[in-house]
View 1 (cartoon, rainbow, N blue to C red):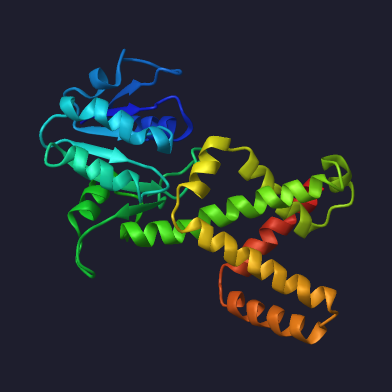
View 2: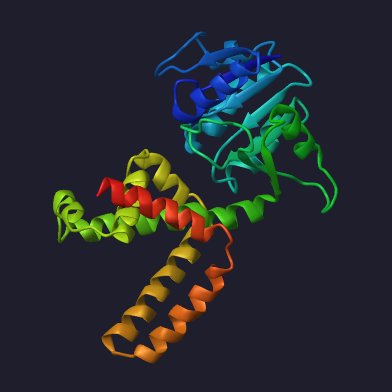
Length: 280
């Protein structure tokens, strides 16, 4: 199978290039900013069975326009953007019946070492309890992955919490902490909990600012989630400022009960605490 990866020198682009190479496929790359085995994106996809677009979210449709005229009939165009609401409808209109369009969201980063069991969200249009063509195609390309079928709306609503909220809270956390302590001062007196939180903030800030902004501003559900977070903060702050211990206890206990049901929590927390203490 011939696979073209557009954006092959980027984080996720390099991941998919390695992934298909390790599967024994013939992989082509095209990336004006780095690795370039073909002069243009259009040349890279010509004659290929699969073309993966791994470029910034805002560039996905623009790049797809360069490719559609050169895609082989029956081939598959894979897009991996983490926000779908605007991108996917535009791609569907653009690609039409010229090729198969597979919209996925890798729920992991490019540093993933083992691809066995990797989580991949797949945007589907089929009926519930029935495998859609998109899901079947994803399973052929990623046979060892954990495929998670989702509608476009379900995906972006979920990502508004899983990605957008995570990004905005950690940007706010880092910004607030920096007003009072330098990173060195922070780590000198850090606890396991604070070390974990700072590590999360550092992980978010290590990503590209353009991607972080697109994840938050490009998702139509992000503002609703961010406003809910703001209301939650104001509510808790009101309890603290009003010295309302009973209200805080009720709220805290309710949340603790909600998340205590997670079986993975205790073992994951032990592992993170251990790592945080070693690094402190």
